[in-house]
Length: 110
Image (cartoon, rainbow, N blue to C red; front, side, top):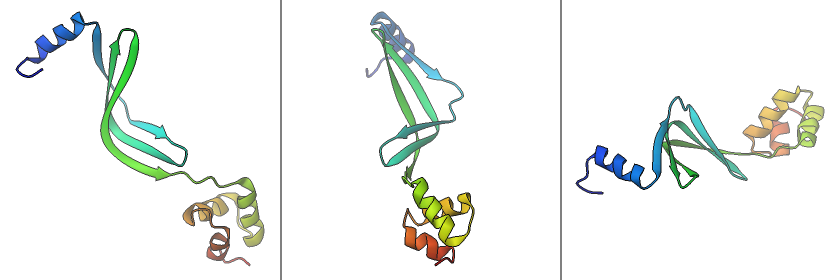
């Protein structure tokens, strides 16, 4: 409310049964969607409690990461075709966004 000092605002909110508190020490907040993650680094998280319900307000710098659903079968196939270990095969598939042929070529196989 314009013209109201923060102390008056807190008092009014308390009278309305609304409590706000900031969470300390939050390092990151991750929101997982079907095909991506939204990561908020060092966010300011405020918990607003009103009528027994909690809401979270999050403010921070976002980073968006794609989620690749790489199957174990794809990893095993790349391992077999190239002779590399599990982690190397998985990393190649991640770098090629799951493209089997490109991952195998990248690793010098078949």
